[in-house]
Length: 262
DNA sequence: ATGGTCGTTTGACGA
Image 1: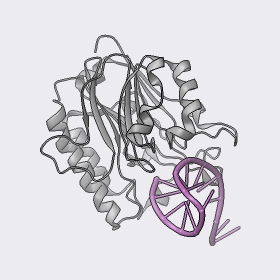
Image 2: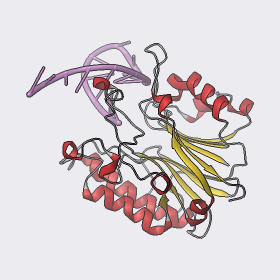
Image 3: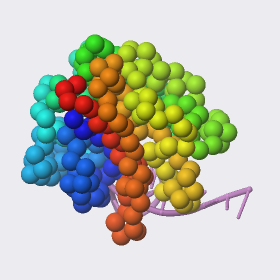
């Protein structure tokens, strides 16, 4: 089973690239972030013709997440689920696909240390941790995918010194990420690749992609059974390339291949 | 040293 997570930075702007990518890579489950669509606008897109069932959680303009699956899509949930303070924004969706409890999440950016949005980010990660208890169990196959806006360690940024005093690498953010791992999840890319300098996001500005200045913030966190079933993990950095008249997202897709059955 | 580009939109703002 092939599971992919990809922050597309507007599904409307990226639709032709997403469709081409689907035809080339044939993912069984596709976790999208930053669709920037409302639910009714997403429903007008015809992913059914590619064989997918879909769930989308979007408000339009900003945020928006989706799950596309051609291996079944059961028990869909928008947001954190029952018993947790509801989110003010559309950043999370859960569903069971091919026997795996999958999440597509778009963690708040944080903007700056001490900013209200940074507090929202830390709180959001705590609520995602609470959502795990509601939506999944560590002994089951679980895959929490998305744009976490946190670089797990210093190998995941091009120059750690440049990030001192900024978001994405602060101790508090990394602690919240670790608390997700403590629940029973593993960063499956890191399990298969130990080198630094392997990134999933590059700023559009300043030719950062070509200078290899990026961050690894798009993650797939798998439970033990997913880790054991993982065949390989890759980041399709080729998808970050492209001409001005058909620009790429600033994020590359992260692909996880699981041996069947999980 | 500074700012650099996208996408939302048509004026800034978010990333």
